[in-house]
Length: 622
Image (cartoon, rainbow, N blue to C red; front, side):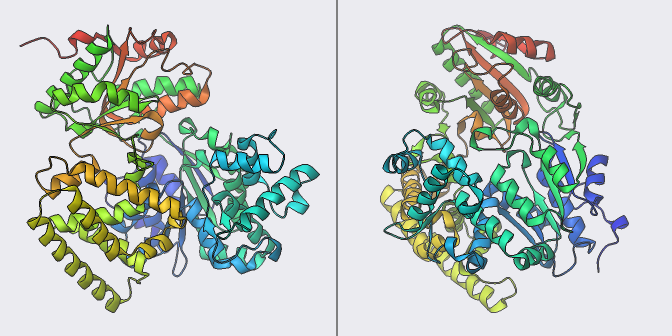
């Protein structure tokens, strides 16, 4: 029986802040929710989904559509809803990325696209590089057109080109590109921006499909809305504007760092106008404690002078400095002192190595060369998440579907009792096999297959110690059990052979690396995932993550040459990175590397950031 809306209580948490309650209960009108760092945007959406499903405000068989920008964000939101709702309710919550949503629509309604632009059923996904675009432009005698500008035109130009593009030269160039992509020697290639345009055209041309979409999804969630591109915005408007569907857009303008990738300039303002949305702002930070939140507010005010103050709800759990500029005289001193400081914190039991992240603006490989040997001398391993293995960055590899599927299977081989690995494996293989949760016979068969495979895997891992050759064999066995073709059919990013092989090779190479000097297969998999290692990453890659302690490495005017008060996107990137810290944030400055960033220090020091001589960061000798 549904719960009466007035009797419903949050699931899995004690309570929500008053403004979150107001935004959650707003179900008659679209809502624009701005929520800063640590405000619990994902948790808010999970609670709103539970509210709509458990009260019957979203009744059977209707569904909630949640669209995120990153696959891990979509999966995280879906997992939270599963934890808070019954299985039947959770099945009616569909969480996917923008790209997955548009591909789903294209594959289901391809025949509804007008024939002139209808792609073949066996099309492949393309991820064109800048070089690919430049070669196309040269082939067609237009080297004067920049690749970036042309890509934006493909992504933002509505179909059919014959009706939407007035300039004849521009129209011919765009038509040539579409025709060339459709007539590739190995079959049609569609990029996700092209799929976006096709789906928008299809919805515009077919009122019946649009009506069915609106009836299916009376509620739509849009996560990280500040990063919405103009093409994505036009698709959302084409699908749901002037309908009875109620939209909830969540995000934070201060965290918009995707302008270079085509993000809109004023996404929230346009959403409010387009969907007559009510604005709400969440003002609690559940990640960081009061001292860090106060510094965050000073930086936020530099971005937006009218920003409201946030209430810190994170608890201070450490003693000593929580935000400081560490001043070093030389690079050698800087590396040695940072390594010794992390070692002392680990030895004191205050942090694990993977709790202390080192952030750089760029050139993480150079910093790895500088820091890794010194950390190693102190018994620490530096994990450069930006390093490429087989053509893919480690951080990207860890988020790949292939990695998630194979790692959960390998974990089953290291332990007969790992419920998380078992449930994750079952979910993945259920999706790969297309087995319905309601199909009891299919579920039982799947469980038997997993049990037999994991038992054989455990036998191998018990009998054979970690070794690159054994790692290759285990990886091959898990891929064979999973089914390469099933993987490639289920995950569109693997349709193109080169893209799948890049991930496959990267996984194999990293797994081989992790067997070196490993005592058992558990330590191999821990090393693969970065457990017990100090993470090194660029500030842009820190978005969506959080760490107990963060060290900004190389905060000087030469390294951060574009960090200026009026450089909006660079300042937002710095702000986003700083807000990842739960307990402490330190800025390492070395005079040998460059000059100080004067304006930034003038901003930070009055806010509570202290200056510490690099020789003294270990504190006084006992």
